Image (cartoon, rainbow, N blue to C red; front, side, top):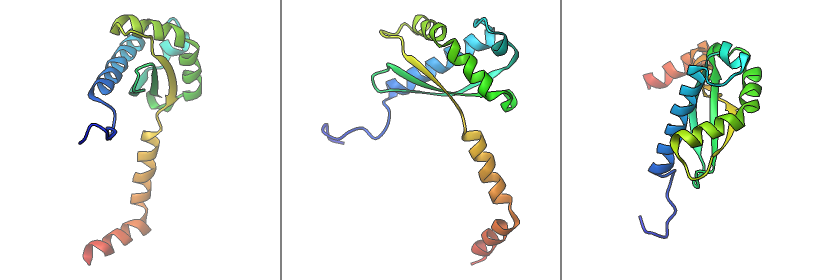
Amino acid sequence: MRHSEAPSGPSVRVLRVGEQVRHVLSEILQRGDVHDDLLASHPVSITEVRMSPDLRHATVFVKPLLGRDEEAVLRALRTNTAYLQREVAHRIRMKYAAKLKFLPDESFDEASHIDKLLRDPKVARDLGESEAE
């Protein structure tokens, strides 16, 4: 790759910082450091954190356990964003506190939908025919 070509994906540093942010947020939520009754009663998985190239913005994908009360959990996380940003910046010692944006992780729903489609008898029949050829 030449120096003038843009890299094809996020740098190793961006990926590493995203993973660190994910771990810190998971730890904060697991330990109950956020004083929010809803977050205390709903276990939340931080499935992925995507950092911007300048590390100033982090998109945090979350999934409440069993998908229960997803909107309420997202509201609670968004209400506590300032606290979470401070904690992440303090624990990772970043130059800037990354702005956190919480979004629902829909990858599980998409995977489930694809699995359901593949199990459809018509699709299974078509797949069987194409394998026989």
